[in-house]
Image (cartoon, rainbow, N blue to C red; front, side, top):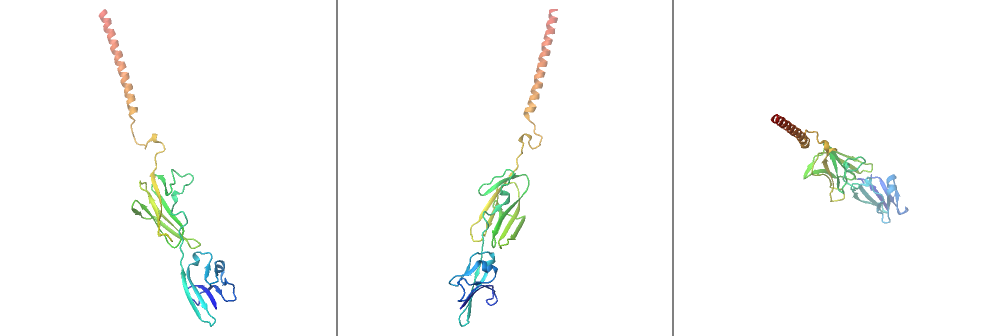
Length: 246
């Protein structure tokens, strides 16, 4: 009797991964670099994959021959999934960097200050096969300004989305849903605050009159005028007294 583990669609043409005949060791004989690194049989002739990567996804065939030479076979599919690398999703602008302006990091988000439109990027890394990533602002879904998805060497994927955000009392919330291997959703939020003036005494440059600056000169003018009028009245009375004596 002989047992052959293959990978592919055709039981006759698919290459062997691990094979066994009664004179072989229990683990069987591997063929190819990758199968010899991660695969072997056990004593029941089941295929053991010791280290799984995206490359191991596919259709596996077990082919058996008896001492009369009759061949039988069966097959199974291996489908893999990988949730994103923790933590996720990540809003890039929430990662505190040296020299960042007015930025704090609460457990589920952050705040930044700006006086212009800003680009906000949300990312997930190392997932497979697919994931849904989008922004909400209030109850409205934000249209992506840009989206990008690419594949890693191990077959997993990365994804980023970018939107344009404005100053708002409501947060922009990045949501990851349809997570591989999970029914939950993950969220991360960012508040966009308006930048305040660094020197309040200067104001916003508009012409605003300070009432103190107006009242003080008026009081000075009134004081001088009153003093002058009193002096003139006193002088007039002295002249009239001299004439009366004369």
